[in-house]
Amino acid sequence: MLLHSTKQDWFGNIRGDILAGLVVALALIPEAIAFSIIAGVDPKVGLYASFCIAVITAVIGGRPGMISAATGAMALLMVTLVRDHGLQYLLVATMLTGVLQVIMGYLKLGSLMSFVSRSVVTGFVNALAILIFMAQLPELTNVTWHVYAMTGAGLGIIYLFPYIPVVGRVIPSPLVCILSLSAVAMYFGMDIRTVGDMGKLPDTLPMFLWPDVELNFETLAIVFPYSLSLATVGLLESLMTATIVDDLTDTSSDKNRECKAQGIANVASGLMGGMAGCAMIGQSVINIKSGGRGRLSTLVAGAVLLIMVVYLNDWVAKIPMAALVAVMIMVSIGTFDWGSIRNMKKHPLSTNVVMISTVVVVVFSHNLAYGVFVGVLLASLFFANRISHFMYSESELNADQDTRTYRFHGQIFFNSSDRFLAQFNFKEAISKVVIDLSRAHFWDITAVYSLDKAVMKFRREGAEVEIIGLNRASETIIDRFGVHDKPEQIERVLGGH
Figure: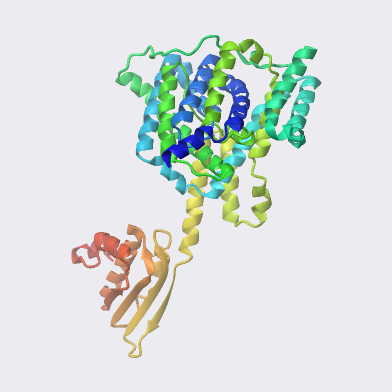
């Protein structure tokens, strides 16, 4: 079974993976250079990182077909570290980032993705689509008409080429777009911005490089806060991207294995003179849309990236940025979940609020972690509020008018505990109270505290209290944290009243 799975991951889609990998490699170059500039380091730092991270995650990652490299989200977190302490400290921070991610993988933090609701994922996707589009705007402002013409032609090729019989389904249209527009620009000698204008491409292979920094507690104190932020944001973006690729390919992935792979890749990147990176939703979508599905596509993307920038840098430098802008606009259009706009009329208000809040926070902060945190927090609050309304009760007085039975239904926890207490009439003159919890469930100590308070108040009024119907889980938490059968605790719970 393992052998079959491995063979399928590597050789189940050879032609599609190789062609998709070529497209991604071309799209990675300007991105890696741009992110290096954002971080304040030489372009080769981002390019070496993209090669190293892509190749390692291709081999040991938990999500075949996902592209990982240097990213803008990570670059933004490095700016002050590079400015205040220099490149060598960035390399140490990159390695420590990797170590922290490996630890997180072994702690199975990848499983936390199960707490991220669908509306948060949708908001995350839409926000990234908007950010990808916004990132292209500098290439389309204060430029000549040639750039707009080339970009328009590129979009035309991308969307129309697949309709050509046979050939349109064999060759990825983004690859045709890049090659065609590069040929046109070079043939006519157009004076438009090219990849070479982004920064000088490296002309040597990466080498093993131990950071030139003393490894002591002073260094650790400097880099640890940055590494922790990088590790958290990197894993968050990687796991969210893996979830999106799972949906696009209708397959599952091992999130905890991906955590470890991202960590190992970042350690290696730091040792090779590269910056920290993570999964890239834009390039991952390009890969999937271009036909890439297996590990081979990610390996080809990383390997071809290095070959092109080192051995074919003169040719790569001539690729017009307009061609790559067209590809990234295609990515932003394809990434945005247009169905989420149509479904807003059908979805509950709380779902729409969570989705829109995630989009707004990510777009305005440019920090994926903030957006997802806000989305998850709002989704949790809405869920707690919704579940609390499912708790209700009914009461019945027996024929002798001396025993009242309260029957509860639903979930009793911190948000419904006050409503639980409000169901009781503590001033009623009765000799016995039966609390039937056979259709209720107690979740936390707040709920247990409310039960304690109800029992003690009834006993203070002279009524006998009997609790029946507890399920095993509720009985366990009440036995452990409940105090209504511990007389010495009565004053503490009732507050001396």
